[in-house]
Image: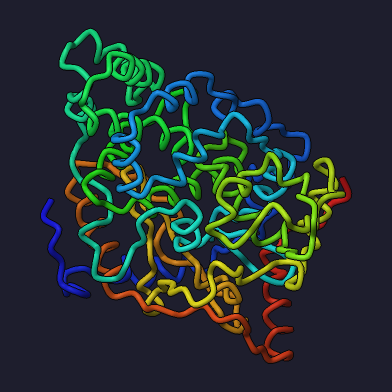
Length: 446
């Protein structure tokens, strides 16, 4: 696919059709009225105990064998933070009660968390900074990682082996298994080969598969394999990572499996909800010891000498009560690492942004999250006419047209600088809060 687009190309209409848009706008549902939503299924255990988030015994031993030259390539490609998280992955403890309670507030139509007086979501810029990934800048649409063609996984794995039997053992269905790939790295390192770039590329598949794209047990999809492979070419993968996490949250919210970077979600929760910097403290925060922030906090201006607001919150019921009563004051809208950062917003209604990935186009409705975007709350936005998650059919003519449309909207997006304070009108805010109640879940007693 040629990646050359004119801004707001005339042949790409912003709406599918006005009538369809109006009908979609009118269908914004109350969260607890969405069929199958886990908010109404308190006994459903969907997150704890899934093997895809269990310890990975082969990961750290393999990483410890990597030659310095290969590690240097990983750093050059913007994977330093991902590498650090991978080396410490077996030390991390996921608090599934908090993740579950957050998923219960995820609205599948808006791709946002619905709190009593505001909506919030994980911003693209936040994710890029948290993981140290190369950041998207307007005008760099050619470097957004995605493909419109069918993916041949064997052509990507050719720098590992050309033997069909080996390739068959590494793939099944539409997934690639990480263990045999890690075993190839181990054998190369023990033999002290000098194929440093190939080793780095394969190591990137392993660490990104575990940290950024956990999906099936010990495997990643062909689509995400292609995304990871493009990193060495200077492509930006933040949109694919965030879109995959949004889709995983939607799956979990509707009673399906959770997939995507739970580490990203936990770091985001840590910065906005759980922890506050406290430079005068002389002891380290015990709650943070096994939290991902221990390993990425430096770049986010957060040390282990922090105050944990949620230290006494234990168990799913306590997390539900805490998050369902969260106030604006309890949520750090503008963490220090975001001060002065530029964020990208839709240019206007009808030009909604969508996150580009190889698996789906995912609606990116950050303009619903006024306070995060340094804007005063005014009205509860209507739904975009685009579907929240549009599964892609690579190699299809309509898919190529949809991708071109999404790229054009990023070309013409607006930009805003994050400020520390937002001034609001009390009367307007009250109207917003009353309107927000229409999509908030009905309170329950469990």
